[in-house]
Length: 153
Image (cartoon, rainbow, N blue to C red; front, side, top):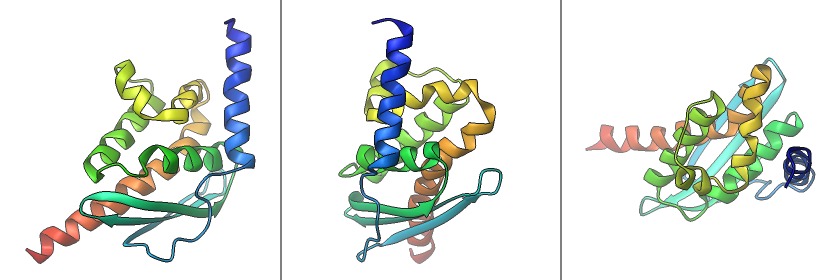
């Protein structure tokens, strides 16, 4: 497949997730929540996660923002739903590393599902925050829970 066709396919995947986001809405059974803002672009992600037995049972987001931030949030929720919290945190690290140009194995990238198409964002430094906002919210929501668990022990 030619590079222009591949770029067109990536744009289609991004636009599809932005126009028809997966897991967008409020999650009434959230055990972990996090809200993050990107003042540069005006993006806001409100993430709600239901964690039970160290596994993401359900996840949803609300918020507003650019196409990249909304598509990335949609892709992230699809990729991590059903995963253990440790696996989701590893995926968030892989995504953040990928966004700044660090190399990862193809199997690590495959774990990200559709989100791996956002590798092209590193060509546009101003868009990196847009793409990583939901993943940062996930990390903070899950780590906040572990910190609270540690404090209670």
